[in-house]
Image (cartoon, rainbow, N blue to C red):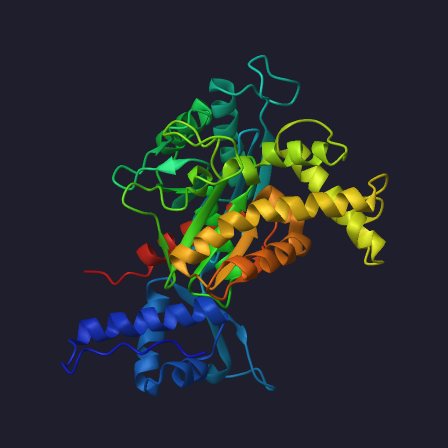
Length: 430
């Protein structure tokens, strides 16, 4: 698809402005389409041959593009040269901060992964072998992890770092914080330590927002400019994308659907906690309680236990229909299909309440279900939720399971860092 042409409203653009527009147009094409010949750039941009020749030389001189190969049957001559973005012009990183884990990824200017590593964090102050304790030891270990991962990637410096974490972000200060009290202090300390140790631009974003970026660019929402990503995990939240842009709200709280007051929770949320809100119907703890009430086994605690219980129920239902996936083999063993069906239906009932509320207020046309529990429920949960919302909501809504997987927040962080780095490096001088 050709990029949108830029017009000057009937006025003649200055030569420098025209060059800047043409350069960005060519770079956007190379970023999206991959290596192209000068002839292909001419065709896709609509520019003249001399203009394309000039911009190619300018971009090569700025070390933004280079010859990466040849095209055509004969593979010879200037017309066959393939030009591509200089991917090692800058390095960037993404960091996904969980309550029990930190994962980092170092990538090139095109967002391609060069090295990735993960560090489990012990929930107890004493720590565990191979797992630094939450607090200063975890912060120091996470900074070391990023340093060593960058070294493995051959990155002597990082241009931009994207960080995804749970909780509210103040749009005025960019600071991570929460009035719920459940987020660990070391998350904010880690952000401060990364700022101090790496002379790079640091972009901090809520986890659900980054997952939405990944789903829109790489996953279930690639055909959508307007949609909502519903995050179901240890916490409950949402990302709102309207007309292609993330909407964060006046105080950064757009999408905090866990605080939505709903019936059936036995209480109301408060300014300091979302218990009694939608979180009490759809969050990880609620899911574990629901599984136990339906007689299903729950192993362990926390979001991992909720994810396992949901995966086992989905596997049991799929096996009963002869739809067992090889990756799910044995996943539903010992789980009776009747209670598993009832459990999935009951969970979908709760999730659908929040989705219907989102639909009635925003009319997004599409809700993508993500997060640890959303991934575990997959298409089986999405289908059930869609059926229920169709009976409650007055507008048409498609419910989809996220497809990027467990690395959605990390990929969103890398993509956000990539966009910022390209905006900086591709900006015209002067």
